[in-house]
Image (cartoon, rainbow, N blue to C red):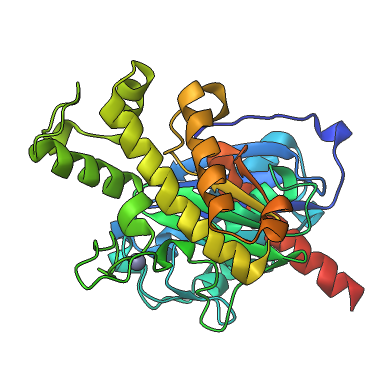
Length: 343
Ligand SMILES: [Zn+2]
């Protein structure tokens, strides 16, 4: 159990919220104040095979331990936000069939956590929660609308329009990674679900490594090894830093694919801000390669968009890293709490 008290409780703004981010291997639990500051943080193993009831019991125990260590009473916590991977039924508080959680299918997780912790629970998709975190206290904090694309094994997403998180009719809102950017019948296959021609099939970290491996095996000249086991976007980034032209080309093509998806997002929803999160950022803002990646996305996006809306759209990197999920879950709980207070 790790504990990171970040702000002294004396300087925080009540009420408080728990934000919980359930991942495939770990669960993050943050105690967050009304301004989005983290008072304390814990992380515990998911232990997927032990099932969701066991996991929620441990989350509740861990949350109570966190409160004890900070000398905060349970009654100061007005609501809990829970983010889990989809598929899910948000209004009913149900997990449906999350692919990385085979022992958690068709489970009433919200009721289970409410019973274990004794506080009302708000429910969100994990990527939507991360988007809400960036919106509340990260890159999007001065905006009223925002879209997040998370570039990892897959491409996740979340959308906030006019301060409202887009959940959708089937709790599937914001799944930007499955936008179709290639209509050909032999277009590349998605990482999850096997959809063809989706953004994720071209611009996720696994797809980028796969695209590079295919070109290397076909004879492309590069300092990279064509061995797929050794090929990661981290290595592609490192080779690009050293001037490997092939790696830079792969990164720029990835930027072009992302720009197509972003143009569609912007023409549909006009979020004003598109944030790039996830592990694959090619060094991000701190690296010339990362800035070249971002500049190429902006260039191609402008080239494929209406000038008027492109002029009013910013594209930028995320700023909260792995904290976005629990912060956003707490933010969703806070939003629900404020709405209930207003009625
Ligand atoms: Zn897909």
